[in-house]
View 1 (cartoon, rainbow, N blue to C red):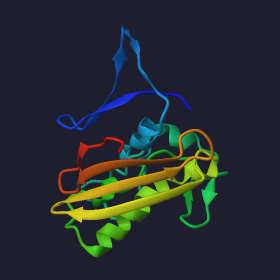
View 2: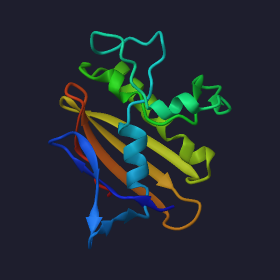
View 3: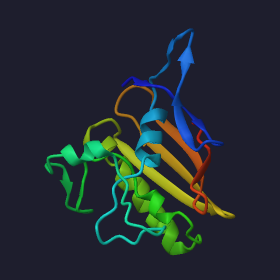
Length: 167
């Protein structure tokens, strides 16, 4: 699976395309797909409590075109939609409940890897490190490189991703 490579800029809290020798760089691993899955804001349900005043439920406009055929019975969320609900935890104090919500948000956002056969197994590890969440993603690939691990540190109070390197 080849994607255009994204580099994460923690200062701007944004991903950007990489150039290599004057051309767009590609990523043959899973890092870019995981970055998009975890750190793109999924649309919140109509009854979800928002972390900020207003009624912006976010989400990618293209998800409006999802046909509903990918409804996951476990989450009642269309599995064909992009992104995660991690953004709903912005400004949250890290408690056991928030850790469980973060774990579920990460797993839901990455479950397409299992459904589409990109990964044979998926493990999500979410731990508190002070005021930040340490998110570890382990994938067992059905072919190609075996187990891969990706580690991210995300500050829920500021929604800042401070690292995101594969290990």
